[in-house]
Image (cartoon, rainbow, N blue to C red; front, side):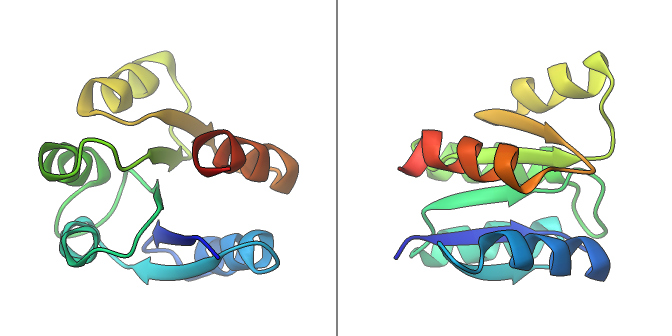
Length: 117
């Protein structure tokens, strides 16, 4: 079973993501961008769902660091910031795809499947 890293500092958003993922994927949690970078470097992650607004290190900086070390690791931005400018910044940082919150389970699972089958 594939493992997804959910980089999300908000408990209720994380709980929602576990509900969406639990039938099809294993998952781990990073509560900030630095934890996401560290966990990606440890390996065993097939895809990252990256919140953008997080403490310690935001999701954009974390994405840049992860992509520098692991260019083939898919990252999907998952954020309440759904403006075109936010989307552009996320893609410039290196995300592979973009989902805005609140996210539907169908859309989320379809996007994950597109990247890791």
